[in-house]
Structures are given as C-alpha cells and as structure tokens.
Amino acid sequence: MTLGHPLTMPAQVMETNDEAAKPVRRRVLSFLLTFLIGYVIALIAVRLFEPQLIFFPNYPGRLEGDWHPRNLPVEDVWLAAADGTKLHAWWIPSPDKDAKFTFLAFHGNASNIANRAGVYEFLRSTPANVLALEYRGYGHSEGKPSESGMYRDADAAYQYLVDDRKIDPKTIISFGQSLGTAVASNLASRRPVGAVVLEAPFPSAPVLARKMFWFLPGIHFFVLGQLDTAARLQEARTPLLVVHCTQDRVIPFELGQTVYNGAPEPKRFLRIENICHEESSIVAPQHYREALDAFLATLR
Image (cartoon, rainbow, N blue to C red; front, side):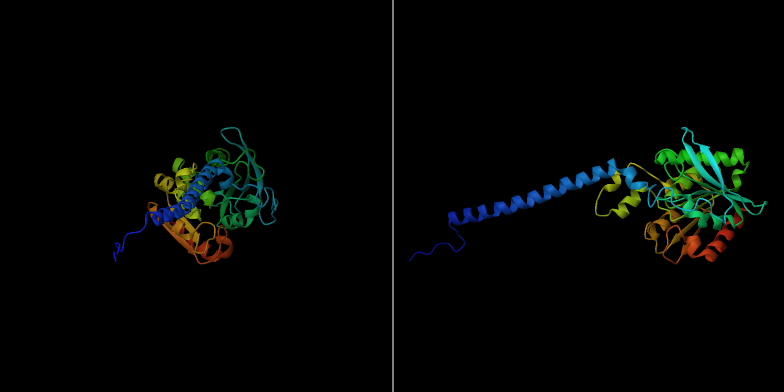
C-alpha cells in the first residue's frame, strides 16, 4: 500500500478554501474603504462648518436674559469696529470713584452679556469698573462671528476705554472666560494692559479639538481657527491669573493647567474645587475674591 505525504492536500481542496476566503477579504476591504471615506468626509465637514462648530450666539437664545439688571448700573454703549461693524457693550462704573482698575470683559461662548450679569457684579465689587463687550453676531451686536472679527471687536472696546473714558492702559485688566480667554490674551499681546485674568482657558483651538474629538485622529490639522492663547501669552508677558474649576465639563481642567504652565512669570493659579465652567465667582465667591484681591495687590 502506497501512502501519500501527510502535508500534501489535493489541488481541488486548496482552490476551494481560497475561493471561500475571497468574500471575507472583500468585506474587510469594503469596510475599511467605507470607514476611510467617512473619516475624510467628517474632517472636511469640520473645516467647512467650523464657524458653526465654534460660535454659538443663538444658544440658548441670542437675546435671552435680563438686559436691565437691578443690581448693576449698566450704561449701554455702542462702538464701531475697524471694519464698521456696530457693537454693543455695557459700561458698568465702579461704586468707588477712586477705583484703580477697569475690567475689559470678554465672555465665553453661547448667549450674551445679559446672562452674565452676576459675573460683572462680582468684578465691579472689587471695586473696579467693568466694560462688558458683546462680540459681533452676539446679543445686540451686528455682524457674523469670526476669530479675526472678535479681535477687531476687542480693539474697539480697548480704544473706547482709552480714548473716551480716559482709562490708563496700565489699569486695564484683560478678562476672559472660556472662548473669551483667547480674545483677552490676543488683546494683551498687542496692546498694553495691566494684567490678564483667564477663567477656563485652553491652549489653542487645535489642542482643544484634539482633546474633544479624540476619535478623529489628525483633526487638529483641519482646524482653520487658531485661538492660540498659549502663544499670545508668551508675547504679552504681563501678570497673569488663571482660574479653573477642577470639574469643568466644557474645558477640561488639565487644559487650564497647560496654559498656566507654559505662561511666563509673573503668574498665579486659582484652583476651584467644584463643578463649574464660567461660574467660578458664583460657586466660590469668597475663595475667588481673596485670590483676585491678592493678585491685584501685586499690581498696585
């Protein structure tokens, strides 16, 4: 009896197995191709709809809020940006006529200045004056939101303080919250100010995108806007106070630490052990007040 080689398989069996594997390979390749196409479409969509993904002037309502708060002597101010865009702001004078500082306040994303009256009340009680700016496309301001436009808006507000209110630039505190931290830092890098105070900052738009959309590798390469707070602080080189809640569900706490760690001296960091985003002065007013007073004392 003749025995065949134990590892030898009939040609017909090998061809059958190969034919059976082809549909599996085709399905895998089809899945990978579909995933790749979907991924590219998602990245392109991010680029095309970036303004809508960054700016939320109509959420939860463009004109929502109390525009005549009882606890604040607000004066409506109308400004014109360099490109002619008409802007609205609140001038809130200090109760102390000898107040040394003026906060130029840039709020965070979504809604308007009317919904942040409590923050301005806190700043005013420093005591200090407050000019709360409404970006183009937000609240009663005209135009459409854009990164470059917001920087022009900041310039208009700054010039109003210096030219119309005769405020000494060294006494202006560039104050920003969340999205506004990029505006506050950008202004301080180009104009003389006394200090910068940032609540819930992030290093830059690409860094934030990489953190928030971790499931889209390479997304930071497709982010057109920069909002580069970290770089602008290097250029500003002015006293800095960073405030961040440990349980911030919008801008992760570690991003605020990154901004602080990379900024030049002199600088201070206030850690708020609570759940909040732009509400640090609401949830921890005493803690915040003590840190802010101590910081301003170094400027005097």
